Length: 86
Image (cartoon, rainbow, N blue to C red; front, side, top):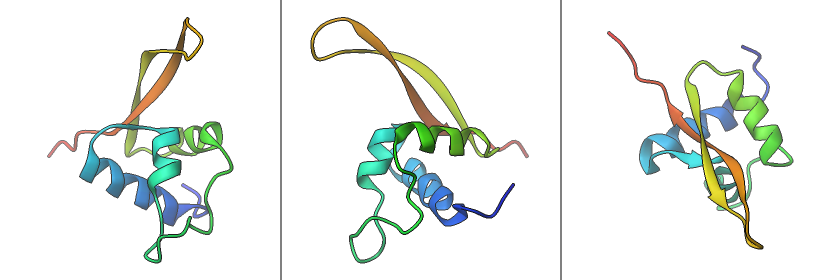
């Protein structure tokens, strides 16, 4: 795994471990550094974060259907940590 965005991926893992499964946009909006500001290597949008997390072996996702604002449905990726088998 490449080292780019390693700290942000670690923060995503901590966020999911503490808060439970979350969508990419939820993580982008809520993950901050210790000063309360957005992290330095934050992905630009939710799709970029999803592509980043797909490449990491610690994460898995589940597709869920969500209601759109103007009616209809769209798919969301709900991210969670993989179970560690010992």
